[in-house]
Length: 171
Length: 171
DNA sequence: TCATACTTTCAGGATTTATTGAAAGTACGG
DNA sequence: CCGTACTTTCAATAAATCCTGAAAGTATGA
Image (cartoon, rainbow over all chains, first blue to last red; front, side, top):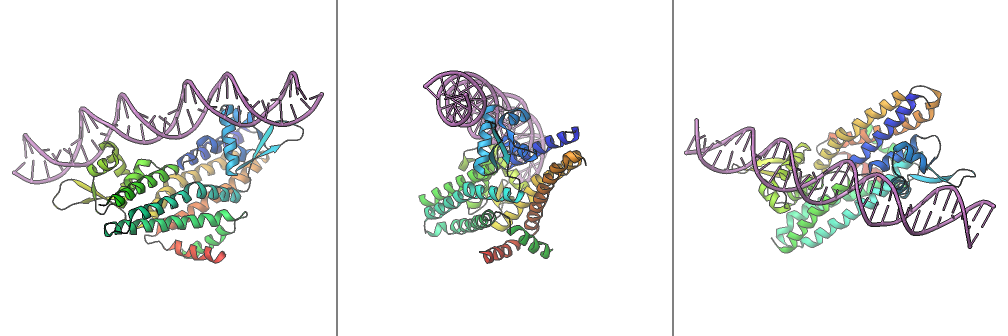
């Protein structure tokens, strides 16, 4: 591997980690993900540890988290007992998985909580403006939930191309 | 204010803070924002401090951060020297502001960094698969950037209704 | 110009979150 | 079954992040 390529992969890993941490995702998890994406073949836990200078426990934890998100899978190499890991390679699929998980983990609970707020506020006149504003917000969050659901629902992404056509037509 | 309404507002504030912190946004900033949204009139820094049990410095810092994001504005009450704060009230506008800021702060830099990765990887054969995957990711991020740009560009949201129609037609 | 009423800053402390590493667990081949 | 090669867990520790509060700054009206 040329120096340039190695540096480029390093930069890629750092970039992905930094972005993720700004969106509330563990930086190391994103780095591991980036490392798997950049690799030309499945990597062992030990390679991940070595490349990122992280402990075994940390590597293991984040690899399993990626598995939970559907972003990485275990992959056995012929004959070897050791586990190897590879990333989902299709970026649109990746996007679907992320949409699905964030919808489930972070949007749906908010919808429930906002509904509880409305219930708790009661029907009184003093709550009228709070009900209106909370209701509008709830609509917004439900819309976001709906869109994420659509994105998450398909394996090969059929939604984005259509949305893009629509948006591009709008100027 | 009835107990129910007060509790409902409290729950609203906590909900908003918890959601924000999962998306990489300061929890207190989101709580302050929620407090302003739930309030029927502009609030003073002291009210914010009192309601959320936070220090003056913290309240001031987060109110100014909300101002930077375009989510809150200063509002003078007749005759009083003190500053009062109010939230943007239109949820779609709110959405536009957030889209604009996150695009600027967190998507655009990533596009630059990924472009640098491609440059750094060079044209060699050993980098071919890395170039392909990075390029696909770059496309995805550029698409996201484009969509956020569209959402951010308009004050009254004209994009979402159309997207929703499209998505609903898809079943 | 001064006293006052407010806002801003920032070093140090508190809290939350992430990481380590060693011990415990598991499964495989012989 | 046993030894080995690996994986998983989790209590302790480290790192990152956030918050406080007192001191410095600023604007206003008399």
